[in-house]
Length: 83
Image (cartoon, rainbow, N blue to C red):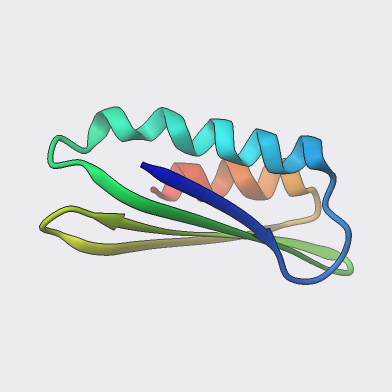
């Protein structure tokens, strides 16, 4: 499985990218059919931090989860809760 973390707007630190990637890699155990590809998009639009994940699951299509918070870590955690 390939995980890609990108930023759209604002400066997101390498630690934040690593945190998002690590969080997303934990959920692959829930997909028996297998995750093929995962993309995380992080952006900052003051005062909000946005996190979006698009996951391609074998034989199931795409799953999308979005979250917004005043802190990027909280936004990533909320996004993961939705997945």
